[in-house]
Image 1: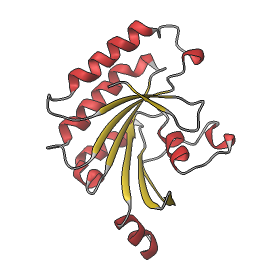
Image 2 (image 1 turned 45 degrees about the horizontal axis):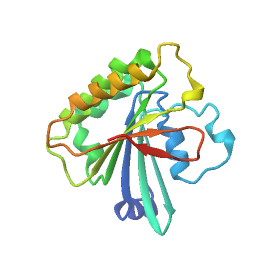
Image 3 (image 1 turned 180 degrees about the vertical axis):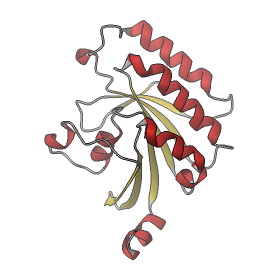
Image 4 (image 1 turned 120 degrees about the vertical axis):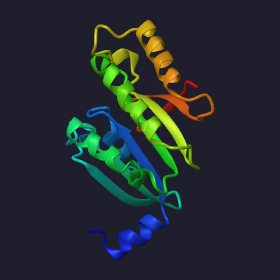
Amino acid sequence: MKSQKEEALSEQSIKIVLIGLHNSGKTSILNCLKGIKAISAFNNPMPTKGLDVQLFEALNSKYAIWDLGGQEAYIDDYFNDFEKFIKGTHKIIYVIDIQDTKHYDNALKYLKKVINSIKEQNNFDFSIFLHKFDPDLILDSNLNENVINDFILKIKEIFPPNFTYSLNKTTIYALFEKTKVL
């Protein structure tokens, strides 16, 4: 249950929803957005169980970041009332662990479900973060430029023609850095 202060803060806040499979880096991105700089916060963060809402102030603005845990046990629950999760949203960030080629199909399936659940694009930004895009940190021997480019093409095929979104490469080495792909 939210306190009155939390309720007031969340109503006046910029709402950002982080969505993606488990271990994609959503919580690490959340920590960066909150300005957390302690390296220990990024070393094996605890998985988000269900929904975690973080309220904070930064750069003269109030933020409400909704981090949706990416374990299969929670994903179906989100779609039972998806409108509840995106109501009042200013930005949706769909996070994909680009290093985890074994879960590409699941990430695409989840992304497609998210896109199909958005009845019409509201007044929010939609971004995809290809997270852990760190060429010197290749953990999967199947990962190479061709695999990534093919994956990006598959992502683009999911979106309806008039759906506005951005596609960004993000890194774990900077506190927060993104490079626009699309």
